[in-house]
Image 1: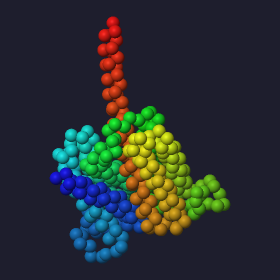
Image 2: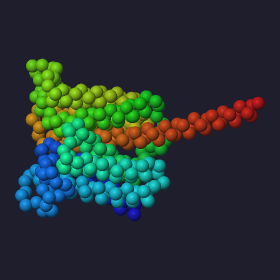
Image 3: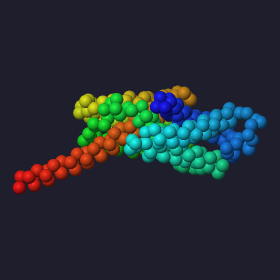
Length: 319
């Protein structure tokens, strides 16, 4: 059963990754209305009579999302029963399914009634939370904690600040990136890293959106670099933290590189999808670091409580 669960968790995580990449593909190719104002059918038909590339992309995304939803539900119930004794399991199981349903509803609402770009930008971020929850469930099922001895990790306040701060801020960066896609502002600034060679300051909305995302991305690169240096300096003996931040740093550099290449290649589709892939992986790694930090906080509280009890007993005995 455990072997089957591991296999199914891996496939479900991969399916969720396809949902994220598929959503980015729909946005990049402008296929959101490929099925018209009809959902879940295409143009009100079970089998569309007029096939277009946009219809194929949109319908494929709907089918993959539907299949992923079923798989996430099965994984949630299965993990609940198999490893429900692990504290995070039930919470992750609920989050993974609820947020996947929520992103589906937002997608459906966008098709049927239409939504502003600022609302549509939430679509990718909500899917990302569901993916991260499924990814963490998979790590729990594979007992990654035991392999990296994550149960014994105790973090100082600065490292916890970096972990909590980076994952919250990364979500803001994700939102700004999604907003760039939905507002079709990917090529609003033809130069990189500045907007244009003639001027640095943006002058119209799409340029401000693009440069706002670049600034947000630059800050997270610097922040992750600082946290990685601290991990290398003080946490070499705690492999989950050490390798976690190293992987995060590599991924954020890859994210930066693909972001620049989107401009240089004038929105090459494969580069754009790689951009979405790297941020998905980065958010997954940051989510795992967050789970470790949360556990470390609980252990620290228990240690402090134990120390207080020991000190109390010692003071009584000394009297």
